[in-house]
Image (cartoon, rainbow, N blue to C red; front, top):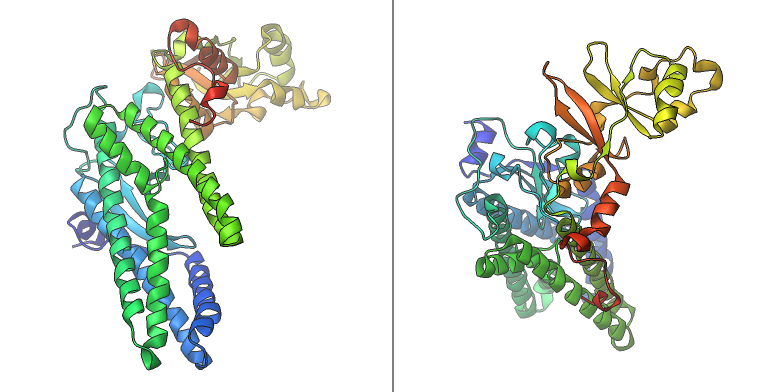
Length: 457
C-alpha cells in the first residue's frame, strides 16, 4: 500500500521538514535553555539546561504535529484528501486537497481565506498562483487530486444555494475544533504537571513542562480569537451558518467579531503597558493584526455586494482591433494603437488564435530605430500570464483573478471561436471595476461607500 493510499485511508500523512524548522528549534532552545531555566532553576550544569531546551522544543513540535494530525482526521471526515504536514519556521501546517465540488466556491475573507474561482471557458482547475490558500488556521489548500479520487463534500444546502461554501465552512469549523482541542488539552496537562512537580531533581523537568504548557495555551488563546484568519473565526462562521443558513451572513459576523476583538486587544495592550510593562504590547500587536484582517474582509465583502448581479459583459470596455504577431511595431502603432486610444491589445498568431496581449507602454518602449524591424511578438504577454474571463462570468470573481495574474493590468474578456480558439472581446480593468462599485447604490446593490460612523464596526 502506497503512502498516498495510507493517507487517504486514515494513516499518518507524510511529514516534510523544511530548513526553517531548525531555526524554530534553535530559537525555542535558546529561550528555554539559556534564559528561562537558568533563571527559574539556578545552579544546574549547562548540559542540563541545553537538554531541557531541546526537550521543550521537541514537546512543542509534538503538540503542533498532534494538532495537525487531529485536523487531518477531521478533514477526512469532511471528504477532503489529506496531502501532508509541513514543519517549517512558523510551526506546522496541514495541506489538504479539495474536490471538484469546491471549484466554484469563492468567498471574501482575509488573507488566509480560501478562494477557488472558475477560469474563462468554465474551467475549474486552480492555477499555480492559487495553490496555497488558508482554508483554516494552520491548514493549506492545494489543487484537487487526479480524477477518480473521491474528495467532494457531502450534500447540504443554504438559503443562498451555495452548497460547496456551506460544506467548506463546516469543514473548517471541524478542523478548527480538532486543533484547538489538542493544543488546549496538551497545554493544560503540561501546566498541571509543571505546577505539581516536586522540587529537587525534577524541578527542571517541571519548569520545562510548565513553560511548554503555557506556550501551548497561549497558542490556543491566540488561535481562538475571532478573526477571518483564525480558528475562532471559523467556529463563529459555522455557528451563524447553522442558525441563519446564509454563508454571507456568517462571513459578515466573523468580520464584525474580528473588528471588535481587535479593538479590545489594542485597548487592553495599551492599558497593560502601564500595569505590567511593555510586554503588554504583544496584545496590542495581536489586536492590530486581527483588526487589519477583519477590516480587509469587510472591504472585500462590500466589494462583493456592490458587484453582485453583474457579469463581465455588463461593464467591459470593447476590445480594439487585434494586432498581428508578425507585424512590425511601427505598423501596429500607426494603424491600430494610436487611432484606438486604448492601452491593451489582443495579439493574433499566424493561425488566427489569440496568442496573448500587447500593452501600449511596451510598444512605446521599443526604441524608435527598432520599430520598423521589431515584431509585435517581441513585446507579447502570453495568454497564460493574463487574467481572463468569459462574458457571462460574474463580475465579483474578476478582482481575485486580476490579483493572481496582473501582467496585463486588466482582465481580458474572451469568447470561443468556431475553430476551437478564443478571441478577445473586451477588457475589465480597475476603472471599470471602480465605476461598477461607485454606481452600486444607483442600482440598489452594495452597501455604498464607507461612512464615518462605520469606522468602529
